[in-house]
Amino acid sequence: MTEQRSKAAADPLSSPQTVIDPAPRATWLTVLAATAAGGMAWGIRGQYGHETGAMIAGLLVSLVLVVRLAPRAALLPAARAVALCTIAMGFGGSMTYGQTIGLTQNAPVIGNASAAAWGMLGLAVKGGLWIGFAGLFLGTGLGRRRVGWLEMLCLAVALVGLFFLGVWLFNTPFDPAGRQLPAVYFSADWHWEPDNESLKPRPEVWGGMLLALVGGWTWLGLVRGEPLARSLALWGVLGGALGFPLGQSLQASHAWNREWFAAGPFATLDGFMNWWNWMETTFGAVMGSVLGLGLVRNQHLLGLPPAGSPPPPRAPRIDLAPPAEVLLLSAHVILLVLCEMVERPPFNEIYDHGLVAGILPLVAVAGGAWSPFLMMLPITLLPIAAKTITMLVGSDPGSQPLLGWSVYGVVPMLLATALAVWLIGRSRTQTSSARALALPLLLTTLTYFLLNLAVFHFPWPWLPWTGRTPNALAFTIAAAVLLVVALMPLAQRPAARLLDSTASAGQD
Image 1: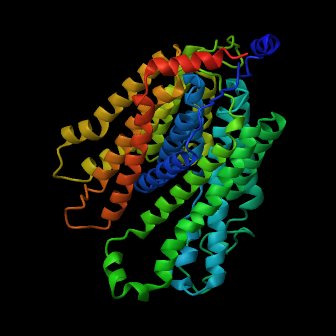
Image 2: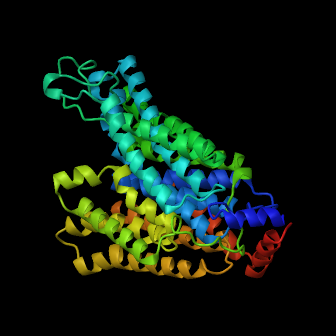
Image 3: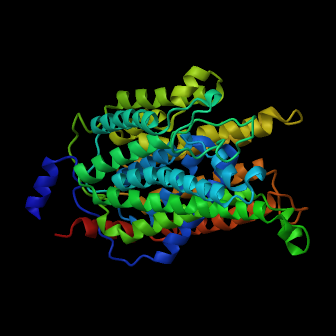
């Protein structure tokens, strides 16, 4: 054991000791909580969209899994894994999928089984790539060897290069005016609607995402030899490839079988069902459950250092200096705000790509001691709070701007920032990940649930039901599950937790 520790000290990329949790974990509760986190978060994403909306799911699912399966891990490495998954879950938001869904449910193709099957295949491809990135980076963060900031920078830039190469290889030619589309194309196509002169095909980028994911998986999983990244990426692909088509099958069944909902009990139900949001909720629930099951089955590969273990020595190619970390995060926040709030097409076309927008935060999280906490709390919340204000304050002439800005923006951002700062301080102590990360799980669950409930205009079940009421009830149940999971480690005695962590760190 002494020799192993000396080798770990010599290699600052290696974890000092693999986390060992001898207490049995309830597999069913872990998978249930991941299902609830994915379903609620992806359903909430439907109101906010794109890359930043998807990050909510990456945050909640990874928080649940780390709290449940790595409870005695050191706080900073555990938070780093959560932040990496949060960022990576946003990558897939660059892919268009509305017209792919249209192939399975739009009126001109109703009854066309070939079009529906092609659309479902496209959803499986896009869903698998989307969640595959989240699994890859979650497995990397939870693995045995840390990725430093310099390696992460090189990897992130390489992924962007592979992305554009993949778009050129698989998603061109794209010339709607000349009716030239890629050979493998999953959006609106004259092949399915030959007489539709108003068809407006959209550019696809799934080929770029595919090449980037294969490149990242090859480097992190094979070249670096990180088995958890290698395995969890495949579980993520499976979860997305199953979740997206399964979710859409509900919506497509409704579109294909209108007569079922013309009379009887289904007719009453149909009036209160937002089928699109149920598609999103189902997709998230399936991908969360599969990703959770994948980590449960591979928890023996977890490589985070235990709480109380001595940190490895700082290394210039691994750890960022504080000024560099602040500069990276500040630049990302400024670019993010400009991209989300200011309509500048040339700028948006560049930074709106998830992989491009991920470079700065990935590097900051990989090398920084503050960035993981700031990324998973105030920075992820910032665009969601801003969009909530836009939807509820900016679009309602009768609203009270000062109150709206305070309730939907200022107060949530202050709470998230304060908690991030507190966690940064706690990360220098022997606090275990479960007790510390239970607090952001508690806060983020309540914050995103309540903001979305406000966007739904508070469809309480005792009021007349609307198309938002069933989803709000499902999100309430999911939020209750997440709150229970968050409160469980907080209810345990801190002294006992610290004693367990110390004993685990001292095993030889």
